[in-house]
Length: 189
Image 1 (tube, one colour):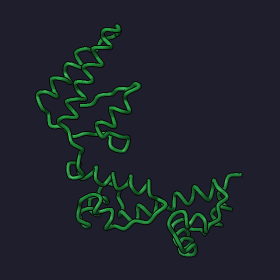
Image 2 (cartoon, rainbow, N blue to C red):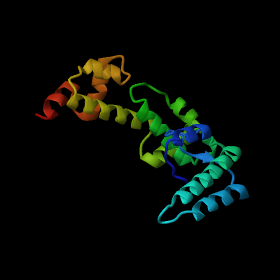
Image 3 (cartoon, rainbow, N blue to C red):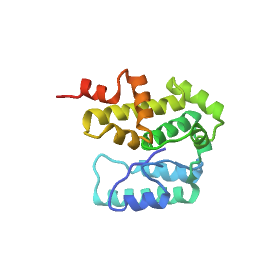
């Protein structure tokens, strides 16, 4: 079930429920009380709303949110599908592209064994987790080379590489040119 709401108190309601953009889902067992309040909320929907209808909608929404607060709990990683667990680690990679992380950290985040995590990751993306992370970093480096004036050393460090020469070797291996050559050959005029 889902409910969309907005208004002056929307942020406070979300905070009360422990919801955020990163955690927009609550787990609540399908109880009779929750289903009843949800159905009551939908029963009030009309094409045009009078002031009285809007007050009733607000009260019905409050009933749903109150029941959710009383009966819900944050969804744990183990309640997510394996695919969702892998997708969460990909999201983590994207948000932490400027850092380094290990395969063990990613597997632990997904609450899967290292072997099972790698197998599931490959089934979903077609590549190994660390290879995927490396491709993400190189794609970010390409973007920086073409759209900033940052030096190669700065780009390398910003992506978690302390040794710019090591970064350049990886970049050359994956892109067929050194970072400087790539910038010269591909930078828009």
